[in-house]
Image (cartoon, rainbow, N blue to C red; front, top):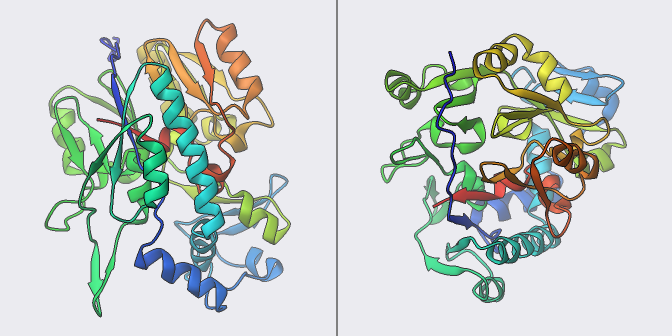
Length: 344
């Protein structure tokens, strides 16, 4: 049986959010880091803690098992990626992506979240339609508002279920986990999804409508900025499966370590849907090229850092277009090309 027939893609419009120039939750994270309230952990103490191990690959932090003290790493990461210079670098890469998609013939829209730099929005407006939107508020206290950190990563704000958007945050501040787009990769009527979504209401509804779900465990996400500070390659486990596996046409590109840890499920998906398996070349998994953006039936946009992967895809007849600039700053913040872009 082939579950994933009807995989034709005719996307005509994308939406990309620029990083925030100001938001209370991010200002607070950076201030905590500067004041030492989100201190850099001692490596020896770190690797001795629950849920942390040091391997030939580097330090692996299992975020599902790690202790509360270890979770402070996330605060350090959050603080570093909202540094003003980091935001500028991320936005420069996003502007290049906006221009490239526009030149490839796609309509591009950029939301004005009232949190963005007017200068950056003005530059984006030369290649995209800028529209006003009220950003969701997830918490309010002492007159301050907190916005979801993922609002600059619109892939994590909704998922198309084939008929409508499943929004991650409702007007009533209710959260729909399936709405976080990084936790799923859809191809036709099949979906690779984080195992955290097994009991999600949207997943159950889509399953009753004929969708086939393959549930996957976490992957290991490389954090270059944290690695530089700890002087060890450092990975945090991540439930965003779209960083580690992608599908274009009948081809699945997957990171080898992720494949090994999810071998049974992925083999089943390959067998049931007659997928061709390509492994990310050694040395390029830290670039997460599986997080490509699908532009059409046989066309993808790939981070130009992954040169071997681009050549591999081309050798299989796939039109693999390199991004105009390497996506280093966005990867340092935890996401790749697909993470930045969503479908309108």
